[in-house]
Length: 459
Image 1 (cartoon, rainbow, N blue to C red):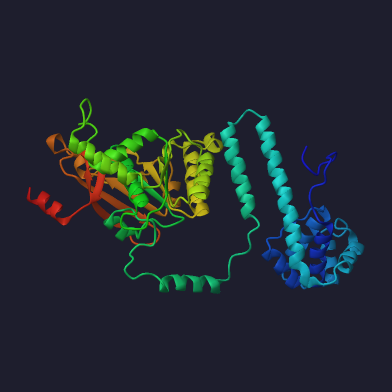
Image 2: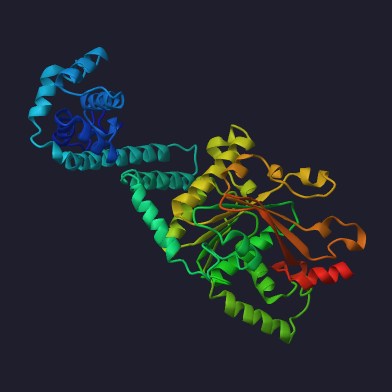
């Protein structure tokens, strides 16, 4: 039984006096009081009394219709819209006016009404969670994620209106004025000079999509960026969260160790490490253990659950970058019945919303369709993003990774270490390609030097 329904033992939180105060203030000073009420995010459902809900809704409609508002006109409007009797008639309108002494206190009344409304919403969400918990159609972990998200949404529902434009302008100017002229980046470092120069770092609230065909090295590049950001290479270090839906935590950590030490894991199979190899791995351990990297390797994560876990990591450790490997392995059961394309659209939207909510860059890895390999040049395009065009729409940055020599035949395949990161979409600036070097043996990307290209051209 929902709180407030017939037979409920408890009356939901509300303040009849404060509700009458808001409406009485509007009747005494319509223009000023309605503006102040709306600025406090008041709406019809904020009121508990059904009469008050209807009256507030009608008063707002009348104000938006630019109709002069006085006692006579308000009564006439309500009568024409068949609402006068429903709100209590003329006598109740007079009673509301008489119960309010000073309309200037409307903001105080609004705060009380909104506080009670928030409590009622909290009760409703809690009851919904309890009802869902009694049913067996969802996993408990998903219910926890949904409940946490609902409560988080409630905590933000009472925020005040957007700051004045003048304050926003001054704040932006102050930030620009105080910017270090030698600082090229405004966001989290990627650790690569070429990418940092092209993007200015990974900006907060941005959804960054790193897409490629299999075997191009997108996981390696993402891990390299995560490592660089956590160590603060060419920038300030930030805690990093990695959600790996494909590889286990142990596999990722070993890959990062071998990559940082520049050792081949394949060559070390079936034999003991040399003294030099041991020393290099030891140095890698000493360096990487200073990084704050949090790996969640839960397979098949639901979008809601991932968002919940990311929220906790942000609150607990102050995570400044989130990496997700990869989007097509995520689920969103709520939309699964509508087809994979609709589900992918919902997942993409949830990841963008998470970036804005947590105010961190979110790097999402994504597969490209086989259309790339059907073209003669094998160059990836934005239209190759797999499953949904929503990924391209939601993303602030789309980076398409490919290695030209991968498609060569015979001995020429993978002979050249050239890797190209095509910034095909950049909401904050111009697009373009960044040439990098891929050390395939160590699964490691490096900034590319001009002499590498000159050597290959001569060869």
